[in-house]
Each structure stands twice: as C-alpha cells, then as structure tokens.
Amino acid sequence: MPKRRESVRWAFVDYIPTDLEEGTNYVAAEFGAVVHRCLEGCGEKVSTPLSPAQWQLYFDGETISLTPSVGNWGLPCKSHYVIHRNTVIWAGPWSDRAVAAAAHSDRASVERHFAPEPLHASRRSYIRQVLQSCFHRR
Image (cartoon, rainbow, N blue to C red; front, side, top):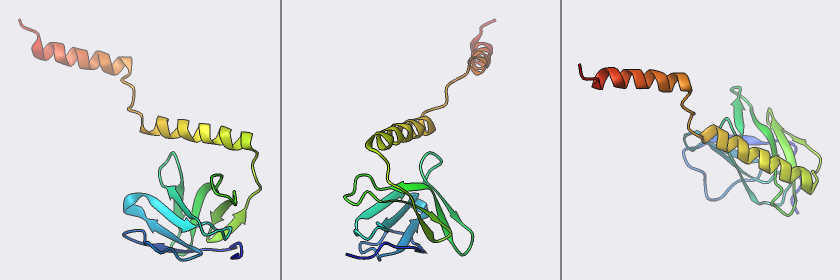
C-alpha cells in the first residue's frame, strides 16, 4: 500500500486528466474543482468543489492551500487532512455523529449560498411604487 503523503504538488489544468498522478492536486479553476488521489495512499479520487460555501483554494504564486479540511468519510480509509502551503496536515478521525452534523451543516451552507436572495419589504415597496407610477392612469 502506498505511503501516506506529507506534501503535495499542484497543476493548474483546463480539464481534469483521466489518470491522476499520486500527490498532485489538479486545479481546474474554470470548472471550480480541485481533484486529487486520496493522500492517505488508498488511491481513491477525491474531488473538492470550489465555492464560498464549500472549499476555497489559496495560491500564493508558489504553494496552494485548501480549506476547510478534507474529510473522506465515504472512503474505506476515512482519511482527514488539511492542505496548507503544499504541506499535508493530518487531522484526527471524527465520530459518526460529528460527521453527520458536519454534513448537515455543509448542506445548509450550500443551500443558503445558492438560494435566491429574499425580496425585502422595502425593495418590494419600491418596486410596487415604480410599477404603479408606470401603469397608473391619470
């Protein structure tokens, strides 16, 4: 079994390659995705969608950081790590209860991020006034 990684490389790509090289994080910015093989060494493909509600990628010109942590709870290895300036910081395991709570929170965050903004009463009132002035017959 391959060894657990302590550091990563990165590659900015137009498309995610079919064959992923161990230890390389492929960044397809146009598609908002970072894909790599699990850093535990199990070889499974890991995809982290980029968005303010999910993962954020930081590139300082030399290194990458990916936040928040990557918890591969659905994989047999159940690995958990943070990538900070190309260094893999291994995090401890989570209980099933903690994983479920985090998954619930993550779903809520994504739903909030992609939900349409509510039309506030003051804006509704303004729109109503504009429409009335446009269509009001004198």
